[in-house]
Length: 570
Image (cartoon, rainbow, N blue to C red; front, side):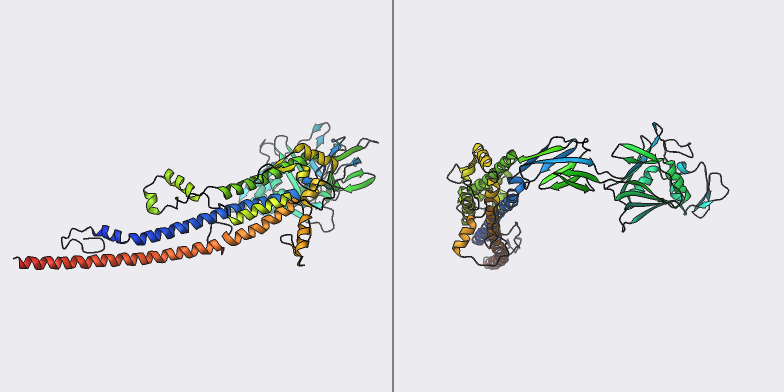
């Protein structure tokens, strides 16, 4: 008996499975063609998306070549970098500046100070746990723990007959980080259970301060036994203000032997003293004070940008001496950036030209599942490489993209007010009929010497018009105005706009990913083809069942005929 019928009753000896398979061959061939066409469209979609991704990357890179800091790069040098170090952006003028620094900005900073000529040591009321750095050892000479039997504890401290509850506040420390009228205060608290039962350490105290929300960083140096706090922001309004909320907190702070650091003369002040409830401005930052080209600046930080030059103040100037800052064009950086442009342009253009001329193998169609069963993985891979070759051979969209790229490069930029108004004038010329370009570095450097701004103008000139992709300008231009507008637009802007326009065309046709539900032309086409294939598979199954039914009936008829013949012949 066959899988779908009653074969064998008649003894016909017919191979029904093979007969059905032969009967289905025409339908299977139809389906295979549909499958191959659908697969070809999927591959074509992937090929378009690959070009789209290349355009997207190239477009993003064009932004770099519109920046003054890259294409009109300037450099600054300081005659005394110990006092002031400098950088320049593209807006800086080629000239010299005079700088003197009378004070550098500093952060409010306190630390365990000095005991005469030696570093002070944190006082431990109980020295029986060396190296543990427990807060209870800093505060109390002795601690007697009382288990209240209900999961709570009480403590007798320093031999006192009175006890304190474990849940009561042992440490209450209020911090201020600014003198601004609306500045917040931040309170840090620890209970007796925290410091005794949980054995909180000086490092834990620092962590608690750091998590308080104050703009103050605390730390405990276990190697040197030093506790420190500093305001994260420099400037005279940024302080370290401390208020001890109880006598134990005051004792703790006094046992740390904190002193304020003076960054101007690199000294530590006298030891700070804390009492219960008394607010102490423990340290205060300083502003930077510097004179640049005769103008004095008072700054919270050691950094300022003036006329395109960024100054970083590192130290105070010697009395009566100034530092000279020289600004000049950074020709090497400009040349390097032009080289990068040439490389990026050639990479994209060459890859597009390769796709346009890639050989097409018409005899290599997508493999069906049945064909793949008889092939090795390596054979399938090699076959598919041939089948996918030439998908964009002489493709109109790719050809138009190449044409736009080449036009953007070869058209002179009328906005450049010198003879260096084309890429060929600065040394970028075509070396092949397909548009691959090379750079004559010597010619570029000569152009920069004669017209320092020519490269920036050539690449970054822009026109605020409806031609620019994405512009909100709704004024309609005549064909002549558009052409004139294009001529005044810089190379990087032209290419950026060309990518935007062509990406839109590619997106409409093939989408931006392999997914077929993107409403692109190919996405819809592939979805429709897949639906037809599914419907055709249903039709094939129905046709196959009819063939089995036909052969079922034939077997039954032959069986009856055999029975009749047996009766007649006795």
